[in-house]
Amino acid sequence: MNKDTHFGFEKVSTEEKQEKVNSVFTSVAENYDLMNDVMSFGLHRFWKKIMIELAGVKPDSKVLDLAGGTGDIAKEIHLNFPDAEITVADINAEMLIYGKKRSVDENFFKNTSFCQLNGELLPFGDEYFDTTTIAFGLRNFTNKEKGLSEMHRCLANNGKLIILEFSKPQNATFSKIYDWYSFNVMPVMGSIFASDSDSYRYLAESIRMHPDQERLKEKILKAGFTDCKFYNLLNGIVAIHVAEKN
Ligand SMILES: C[S@@+](CC[C@H](N)C(=O)[O-])C[C@H]1O[C@@H](n2cnc3c(N)ncnc32)[C@H](O)[C@@H]1O
Image (tube, rainbow, N blue to C red):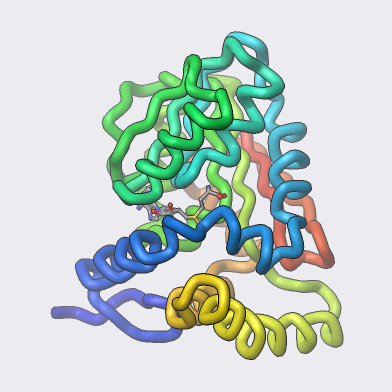
């Protein structure tokens, strides 16, 4: 088998990559929401709110939340636009089970559907969605170019793609502190709170392997989007890319 992609820092074949990513999210699903709060000190909630503000969703929009996991983004959209039609799509059955349960417990199930699929091969017609959101998902795709091209195909003309993802800190000192936190603190916290240090080591490594702000912008434009801007949050630890299809 050709070892032509990466799982964190490890070189793996494309088949192995998808399996390994799946086992990470199957393993973290139960504690996923808690761990997001713990690892980001609750900041991910704030980042997701900004993402939705930039998404330009309209009251009757059709929204695809790709790699939607346990439904954070769907919940935020539903709170603001209860009539929007939201499709939460994810490759991992376990993450979707928790997302579906949450949508009932936290009352965002109306107009929200859950769908298990691979974001690199979307089962939707051309130009179906008005908005596509993807939060902390693209980094895990085996073939990001394929995923972006599918997102482009399924977006209507004048539709928007919003990507929230870890990126590259802009300041060298800040970057060193962040590296120390990622490789020393995160796996230990993963072990304490979720009895799982490996998945959180993968998280730290996958962030380092993901394209930085400019390289991701290039990929987005190459997939056919006409305009792409990005906004750095927390010195670029996280970035939001907003792209348009015209
Ligand atoms: C870090 S979680 C993000 C969940 C949610 N968007 C959030 O921000 O809380 C990444 C998600 O991406 C999903 N994922 C990874 N590869 C995927 C693919 N090829 N297609 C669809 N979903 C994928 C995983 O199953 C996981 O649920």
